[in-house]
Length: 410
Image (cartoon, rainbow, N blue to C red; front, side, top):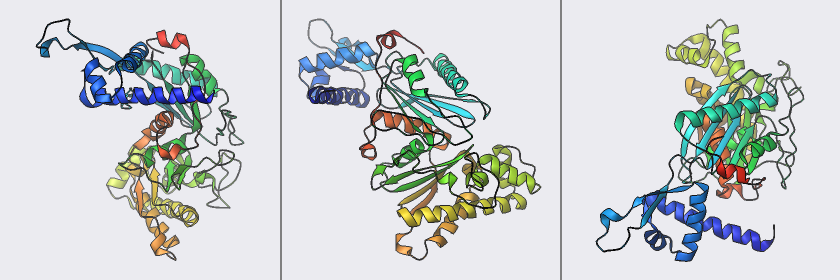
């Protein structure tokens, strides 16, 4: 792409955002009203409006006939299309895939989830994701004929630099090679792929009114992963391994981990590991819901297990906090909402670990705000590419196919 072409694209995108922002804030507007609110010339607005109409980002809502006092033909009023999925976020976990669609105003308008066995091949996972997106479209009426970008999160390390996306994975797991190609071919839209927990960290960092410039994120799910925001930047590392806190050794004599090592934090703090430890201790819990009920009634066996897990998490995060000095430490995953004592114990242990520098300890240790949707929402945020946390982060790659502009559903 030449510099001139790149500048032209940036200017066009800025103009589009002005139009979309005005429609998001004020509702349906005539072209004259849009020109006044955006400061764009009628020629520029005509070009931008025609393109947004062609893509399906906006629609002709009605006319201004009811509010006109003069003669002449009523002017059309334009509005955001509430059913147009402009951005798609997909989060592949070890045992489930979650999809979310956002409209032109960046609001999430549909979400869905599907589960599969951990050993499901990637070809089948991708097909399950396609079927999930189709079902989401059928059930909500959201269509993807104007899809502008797709963000995809995958488990394990994933290198994404300079437009090249060579996938890598842990020794005992197949690498998600070809995910980007499959989605760009299916939908004809630009795609970005990254580690799903790193994308979840991005979502948590920008969830509040102001982006958090130094944050450590840990997600306890089917696996245990992490993400780092350091000095106002989402960190990927030289080979995509930055933030793999779940594979820091927590117990050198522990059980084998999927990565090939022994005693990683994941073997202690993943949802399945926690449930297994509770059962081994004599508690009758076989799901996160059952764990939540045991916590609610004050089961002492479950409480001891959870406090032991929280202590282990706190020790590991203490080392990370001493190294990075974050402003926030966020622990996400459904299990922490069912068992908040994990956060409580991890926070207490972390405070002890950084006690030698009390003025520099993390300001906040909190549960994740976005529950299990964080990876998909972070994937959408990466597609927007507007947060300052993404400075230097790779732009989506791929192309927009003419076929995709004619397709009303995946």
